[in-house]
Amino acid sequence: MASSLNYRLTIQLALDGFSYALFDIVYNRLIAWDSYHHNPFTNYDDLFRAIEKAINAKELNENNPSVTLIIDGRTNVLVPEAVYRPDDNNKLLEFNFNTANDLVAIVDPITKYKIVNVFGLPQALQAKIVSTWPEAKTTHSSSLFLENLPESEDAVVYVNVKSHNYDLAIMKDRLLFFNNFQFNDKNDFTYFLLNALDQNKLSGSSTTVCFSGQILPSSEIIGLCRHYVKDIQFVEKPKTLLVNSAFVEIPYQYYHIHYQAIK
Image (cartoon, rainbow, N blue to C red; front, side):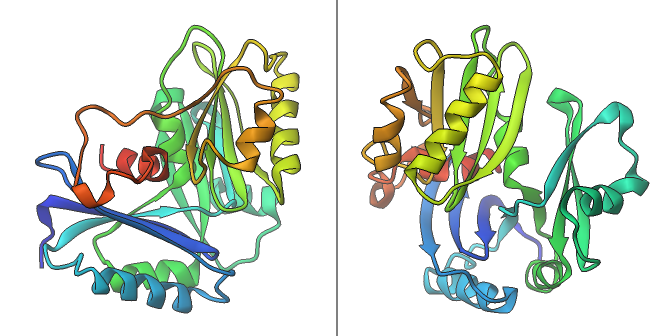
C-alpha cells in the first residue's frame, strides 16, 4: 500500500527508549507525539514490539503515513567529502569503534558542510525496519541536528540532549566543532560542555548555548550550566508549525529533531 502524501510518522529510537511524532505536512501541524523511556531493551525485537504497541494503540497507522526512522546510536563518524570513499564505510566504523561484523553501514550526506555521516546499524535492527516499514527512510539524529543549524557570525554552541548522551556543535560562519558526549549526571554534562568551550577558546560569559532535545529549563543540568554560561537559550518553535491542542504543553525542543526530519 502506498504511503499517504499528507502524513509523516517519525520515530526516534535507541535501546533505552523511543519517541514518535505524527505530522500533517499539508497543514504543517503536529497531530501526535509521545516518548517512552526504558531500562535498556535487551534486543531490538523487544524494542520494536514496544514501538508497534504504542503506535497501534494510538491508531497512527490508520492514515498510512510515510515513515522516517531516526537512529540515536553513537556509532557514527563524520568524513569530509573530499576524502570519503564508499568502499571504506565498514573500515571507518571498525577503526573508530572496534565494531563487530554485524553492522550495516548507512550513509547520510550532509551537503551543507561537505561532509558525510557514516553510521552503523545493527543487522537485527535493519531487518526489523525492512520487515515492518519496507519503504521507510532511515537517518541519523546527528545528521538532522547538523543539517539544520542556523548560521551565525558570532560563535554559538548547539546542544541536542538525549537520554544519556548529547550532540554538541559550535557554529561561527561555519561548523567549527562537533562531538557526542556520554554523561551520567549533571557534573559530567557540564564538564564536557565547558571543556568544548575551552578547547575552542570560547567563554561561557560571552557565548550563547542553545539547547534542544530531552531537557527542560528547570532541570538540574540547566541549573548547573547557568553557573558557567550567561546566555542559555532553547530552540524556538517555528511560527508556521501548528500543534493540536492536546500537545500544546509539550516543549518544542522535545520534538525538534522530529520536525527537522519532515522538512
